[in-house]
Every structure is written in structure tokens, then in C-alpha cells.
Image (tube, rainbow, N blue to C red; front, side, top):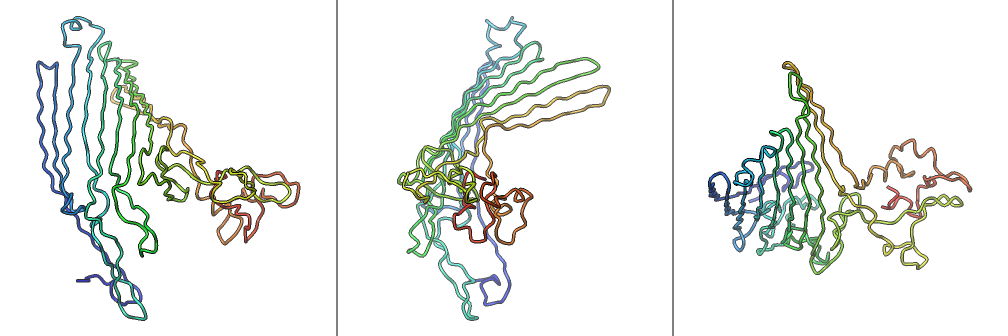
Length: 367
């Protein structure tokens, strides 16, 4: 049953394969009444081999209603408005991206010893693993005025994701580090807006598109209100009530001019810097993102300029953990030329030390 060379007692060699199946049924009903009232109903019924027979299939419906207000008698003769449509929708979608065979207890080959091939258990089973689901509600409108020279689109959305597919930690005494489970909830809500304008319309044409989006993300529930799961180079954390993947570590206060060591905030005032002094030190989510496009056309020639922007997020520069570590064999940036070298030096780069007894290089807001 072990068909790949990595399971054999060989000095060097690897091979792998996987398989998954998705079986889906989809239907849609759409009804349009006098081009004023538009109703759409969707239904999906999906089965995934990533889940066991207990919860293999999920049902995901959605519905939307649109009202073209400018087709009503009280707006038909308002020449200023080219189009006005109100929209509202609600629906559920599913996520099965836990990986193939995520619900099964698995054995793996390649656990070789003294030239003998061997196998070992590599995954705990969870036959009750099921679809992660997201319920989304959306309200929006489309407005065009001045014969479509100005068009505005606006959407407000709210998404609640439940039964999050996560690798939940288990006691290492079990022989495993994690088990795949449905453990938690996340909320996303925000606004999407776009403004399309025709600025010049003649032999020479100039049009613009400006869009802006905001999103607020929050972990609303974790297993047993557990708190914290760290991952990634920036110590990204899962903390209930906080955005998904906030940076977690020590608050860096600078370099002590007398010793050349970094100073970290002693949050619990016990006179020591320990793991209890860690806190949220950054948020990877921007306050808003967007883009600005301008298109110029003249006699068959066109020029398009696109600007993309993001504002308000923190970035953890994990490279600096290595290239400004002042220890080990990694090449260093020129910033380390300004390191602390003698008492009284004022700098943001700590002293060079191969042992680093103070933990200058620990994950902190320094990076």
C-alpha cells in the first residue's frame, strides 16, 4: 500500500501525491418584473472528500433583490438621474480548504531507522470535521447622473464566518501537536465605494475611476476562549476580540546608552522581562485601500495611469531579525555600522554580541 519511494529505507529520495473530489449541484432562479424589481435566488449543494461521511455535504443558499428606482413614475422625468438602483442581498458560502484527508487518522512512511523502513501515525482523526461557513449581508446602490458622466457605486457588507477550520493545539504528550477542528468565529465588515467620471468627452477623452475600501476584521470566538496561537515570523496571534493575525511581542523602548542592550517594557512591573510582558505590538490590516485610474484617449491612442494605495497598517520586517542581528553568519545591512560600541553612544542599533544574553534580537516592536 506504500507506493512512493520516500517510504523506503533509501538514503535520499522523495515523491508524493494527493487526491480530492468536489461534487456540486447548483441552481438559480431569476425574476424580473418590468425591469424595476429584480429577484435572484441561488442554491448550492456541495460535497467534499476533505470531510467524512458525518458532514460531507453542505447547503449554501443566497438571495438578492434590486429596485431600479429611476423607473418609478416619480423619477422617470428627472433627466438629471440616468440610473438609480438599490440592492440588498444575503447568502452563505462554504470553505473546505483544510487539505485532503483532513478528517482522517493518517499514517506516513519514511520513518526509517538503522536502514529499516518504517511508518508512524502523523494525523489525529476527527470524523465530525465539517464545512467552514460564511454568512454575508450586503446593502448597496448604483447612481448615475448627467447622462452617465458621473457614476457612484456603494456597498456596505458584513460577513460572519463560523466553524473556522483550524489546527487546534493538543498536549504534546499525545504524540501530536495539533488536530483539525472547527473552532472559532471571525467577523469582517466594511464599505466599498467607487466613483467613475467622464471628465472630457470629445476628440480628446479623459475618464477617471476612484475606489476606496475599508474592512474591519475581528476574531469573535476561539476554542474555550483560548487565547493565543502564534504563527509566522512576526508572531501573528489569534486573540479573541482582536483582528486576525495581529503582531504579538515585546514593546521595544530603545537602546540603553550605558550597556548597548535593548530596553523592553516591563508591563507587569515585576522587575524582569518575561513572556508575561508581551502584548499586541501591531495590526497588519490597513484602515483603507483603493486605487485611482485615469485614461486618456485621442485619435486611436490611449494612455492609462493607475495608482494603488494602502494606508494605516503595520508591517513586521522579519528580515531584520537576521540581517540586523549582529550575531551568527548572516550578512548584515549597513545599519549595523551605527551600532552601540562604547558607553554613552546614542543609537537605535544594539551592541554586537554572539551570545545575546539580553535577547536584543527577540520578536519586538523594534522590527
